[in-house]
Length: 190
Length: 177
Image 1 (cartoon, rainbow over the protein chains, first blue to last red):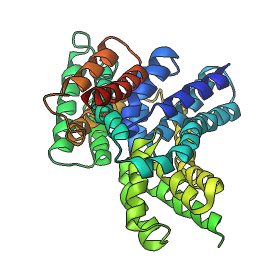
Image 2 (image 1 turned 180 degrees about the vertical axis):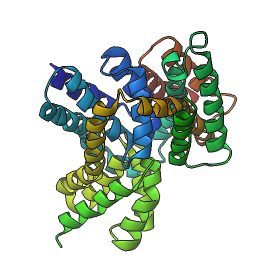
Image 3 (image 1 turned 180 degrees about the horizontal axis):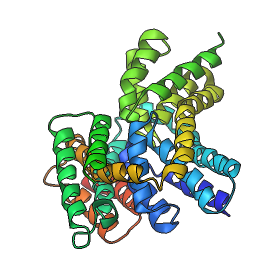
């Protein structure tokens, strides 16, 4: 039952998301692409690009989009897909919401306590690893082109990747501007 | 205007106008909640930030529900959280419907062939900034490396990495003392 699965998967993603949108990507990719095959690597990358260029938290954007596509792929009509999108978005919110209400007072009082600093001392480095993994898993031949079969696309993809990396990292180009530039390059060159 | 309407409108506005997700929202939220509405003072806002960073869930939604909760209890929290999420749900739904129709289009495909490598770079770039914020040093540099290898090369679920890291930190802290 697709709706139950969506509810379960996005509740799980919500509760295990520490460290914000990018850290969440590897969780979403693991569930949505690798385990449930609700979308392809390409579709997943596209939705990350779309999430970057639309307002709101990236997790909500991914949940809404996945909910919609998963239900459509399962053969349901559009209205059911809209329900699936809303269900997935709310699923990602509700558990952290309840937890937060209980934890917030405790944490405000104890955020300097050894207990909390110990746990977060090793959780933060782990999250860096999660984000790196998300990026590495997307360096696939679906996204970059096959080095032997589509050599031109592969080389161009590497150039675009380096350009975007240096641009955002060193020259602080805004991510949305970067996406527009690279999209334009794709449209003109391919 | 009732306080719930005001809560809803304020967070819907924050949700609609902040591109780039969670941390980009902080500045706008501070301006609205502290400077304009005086719902929290600066220190309370900082406390909220710490709570949102240390609890699971979406950063912006955590912030919104916490501020709503402080003002009006559980009901206020629900209003804040839903108001922040609503604009992006609507926007993405429209895009998803549009995208299903235009997916086969050759020009759309060309654009995304250029965009996909860019997205990978956009994800990787903040990794280095985060490494500094996470206080990476010669004693803990192996934690992110091991996590990356486990997830990307061995297909381990990221959930196990989070659980192991949290538990590991707790045990390490106990042994040290």
